[in-house]
Image (cartoon, rainbow, N blue to C red; front, side, top):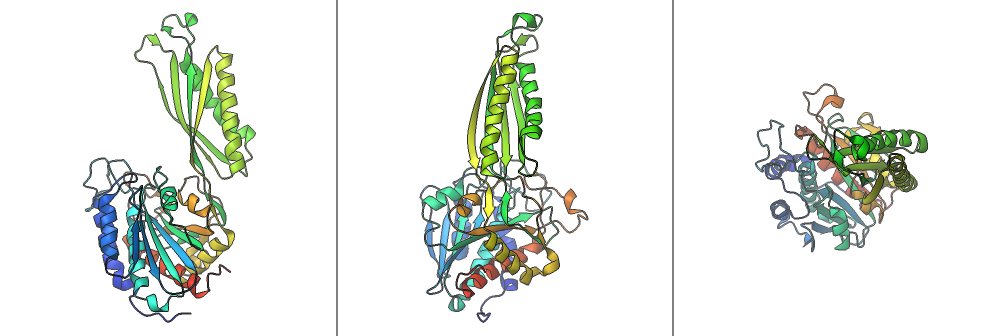
Length: 398
């Protein structure tokens, strides 16, 4: 093992918390995050990194060259969500309709802290550490933009952490294989024949047909999808009509498909198409179904996930490292990274200390989501140990 010299996690954790709060106060959306990018660049300035920025997004790639050897990538996402914050934090968002409700502010700050620690230990590194700060995780495929800019060129393995407010603070949850679901969208337009609401027999009302399709889709999932290779199909929006006494010609639905295997991902959409068209036809209507591909399944490499869990045990202890029994049905654009290089994503618990039952904490994407900043130092330490252990082993995941 390399001698531990340079900065410690304790030396940087105060700055990590301060950076997280600054980013939290000024959240940015999508692929263009100029203020957040500037915070990252300023934090890394003068530390000897080779830095590049994205051509189609506000990504930052910072290379720490520790000599000949393998390259390990550590990744953080930087973007926020379009919702109004009601967390009650003193440093709540100052930007109307924007909030860091998924912890990306913490991800960015923890990775900056790790970069500072590792930069101070450059002489003991046996290879290169690449730090990827990417925007656009929340639906904009920012990882794919970074990959197109060459972020994975020469990378031997990649690791990421995601905070979990519903996991005990300082604990780490991990999993081999599928760890998060794919996320596709579908639209269904039910086309009928409009008329007066007092004479529905002279029309073909698409509204009850749309409602029947929603119910039929839930039955379809339970009868066509293997319970051990699950899918979630949800209709989250239905729009139809203009007033109380007019039967509209069209009812439109928007929904999501979540799966944890590519085969089920393909099959579920075929079933949706068949159900929608069949139910509509039974009532004298027609259905048009469209699919919009989202993020693929996030699949942790088995060896990389085991490696990541082993490193976590050295940081937080055996008791605080738990293996997830099932994938989470949320989605992640780190999935694109894991399609190219071996790697893994784990979850760092940040449940606020005053919440006795983590399952009751405000979850990611809640307008009341809060996190325990006391866990940020643990995240920094995990990043540092992942990189140094991987390089100390010459790039071996075994």
